[in-house]
Image (cartoon, rainbow, N blue to C red; front, side, top):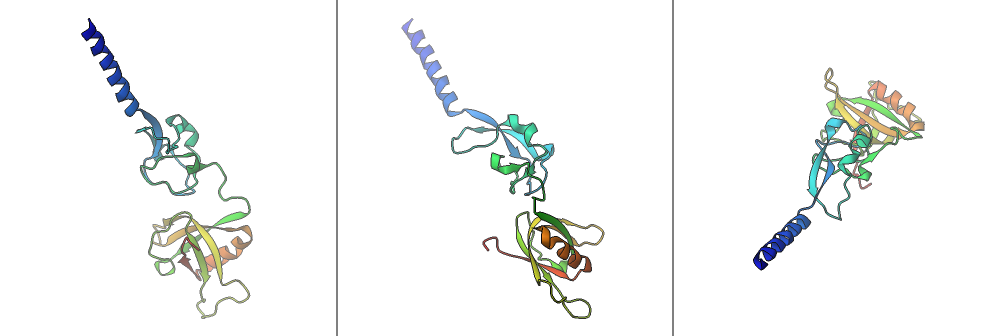
Amino acid sequence: MAAVVVTALGCLLGAWAWNATTSTEEVLAATNTIHRGEVITADDIRRIRISGDPALEPLPASAYDEIVGQRAALDISAGGLITTESTTDAPMPPEGQSIVGISLTPAQVPALPMHGGDKVRIIVTPAANGDAPNGAPQFTAAEVVDTAIDETTGNTVVNVLVPYADASVLAARAATGNVALILDSGAQ
């Protein structure tokens, strides 16, 4: 009888130790890379199980429906955990700012990939007659929201976030095609 009690007690302690060291929780992770500013869709996130770690603060899987439709507040790599800092419901563009789309030929834009949050300057280039416009700032500082390739022209379309007061001047410059984009260091 004592052997049965000892065996049962050993099994219970073993089960408790296994459960304590293998406790998992269901959380949200990115299915593919989600760039800052993009609206998160149901295809962008999934529920996964991970071992609990007090240093990690991922959103629980129960937050799935709340996250779908929000915007990414930062770039989220494929497989990355979704946290409270990962998403925002703030409107895009934020108050006091505008988004301007600029279509650029390969000669007007760096060949490096650009992502949301990258710092750029849009430079005024000379017109066909060789003269740059007078009286206006020679560049506009901006932040990349996203980029896309125009399948018809092959141009890179860069959507940039600028102060509201600079948007109309930049849009007019971009419409002439007399601009170039410089990708600056994020440390500046």
